Length: 143
Image (cartoon, rainbow, N blue to C red):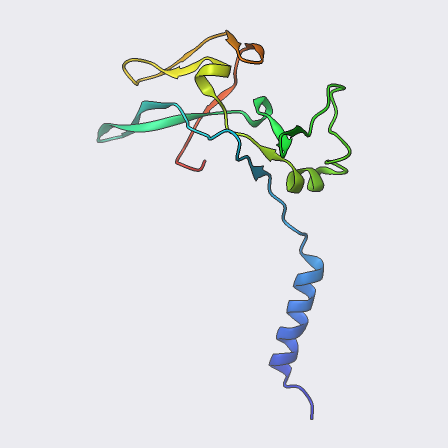
């Protein structure tokens, strides 16, 4: 007995989807350093006026530790460790990006009025000196 056309079409679409849609790989979150964003008050303004709301900043991922089980995924030779990162997808799947110690390592703190952040250019940390930081104002809890 022949398969109905609609069932056959659905089956063909599923097979095509599996083989033609690329695998999605995302960077893994770290578990060794929690991510706690420094907060600040920001103004959400419309033609009717402005309302203060709590916002936060986030440190650029380029400034963070990328590791697998406590071992660096980035070598001292300014390259990704091939043991973990044979390509970008493998690196994203294997290595995790840790949270940031904003005040201790990067010298970033909410100011006393909570209407901004204080940025130290040089921060003397546990593992040496850190120079500068690159922050972004977050749009929400996840972005």
